[in-house]
Figure 1 (cartoon, rainbow, N blue to C red):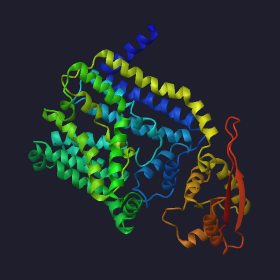
Figure 2: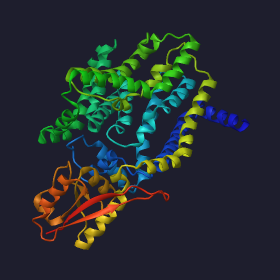
Figure 3: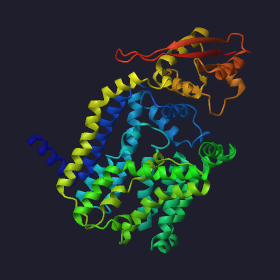
Figure 4: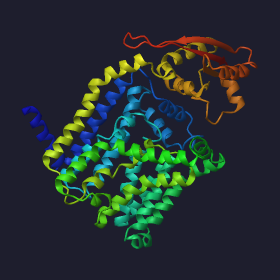
Length: 500
């Protein structure tokens, strides 16, 4: 106990003392390492999530847009895997950098509203929100928004208060990056406009050059993607409406209730801790929800608007939303909860927060091997678990048929993306992508992979292979054992259409 007490004393002093900015960066680096290690071990029996292999597939075919989403996640993956190997550990490392950067921006903006004790306690509370660890391990278009929303919120608030040209430019670039990450970001931008309109300083802001610099820079940076959208008939919007739009009012209402209920569930720990602090400090809850002073009310508006506007938009448009999409909206949570002047956070409270934020990843890291074993016994997603073995088999068969490298993989999108992510020759996936020209495909050839029991996929593959004399179809069964625990076998159909 004496050792633990000394450790807490040192950590507390490091995070609240003069060198706290540097020490918070070191603490976040340790946070990234611990959760990356957890993800690498706990998920080692199941392979990469489909969302992650989809991003890898996009990164092999860089474009200013894709049929499902805007392109920023693919560009980030392309840059990352240009330096790091395509491996599970490196992908989880990239994934955990997203919440770590968001936490750093949350820490920075908290300096404008909280004292040193509250800043550390607030950061610890955010580290206990599943969005910043468990869910963040799945890198996709939602997780990439976490640092972007955080940065854009901070830069906008600084631009609004100071009318600084630098912050106005940064806010515009951040806004464009958010929209390039996911169109859900329209609610952040709309929310920040609401912030500007509701604050008493709106006329000073709109009379300055700041908002027009932000808007101009944002549109300029977004220009290439807007051109792509027009050229492709706004295909991602059609995809989104097909999947989530035109829902009955009852379904939409259930979605909105689930959106708020799920979001509150994810931040349950910070809410419970704050409730205890409020009761102990005799602080009014109303001063948290809607502060009386101008600066805190500005931050509260910037917190509430992007969180509430999606629900209003869903009800108006008949769109179904889910609480997972609120993932990037929590940058200002600690500021809103802990900023009331009467709310007291003591050194003991901060130390307890440090213990909890440190214990959670350590406990999960210890549990990670057992989680991997349980997943293996339950049976992970076949295409993900078998991806490495299946990719090796496809590449072996391909090079028996032709000396040319494997450039394209088609067939079932789920399998194709997993194979592309695992294949050593880094081929491109064709499902749900802009197809290459017929001449390119004829000269390069293609491997088409289907589940063995998917008759429609196999029939489509056979039709494409019929015109190529040297084409062949191979049925294979893949099983992956993990730590001597038998996996579940699955049959696959591989159709090879070699170059003509």
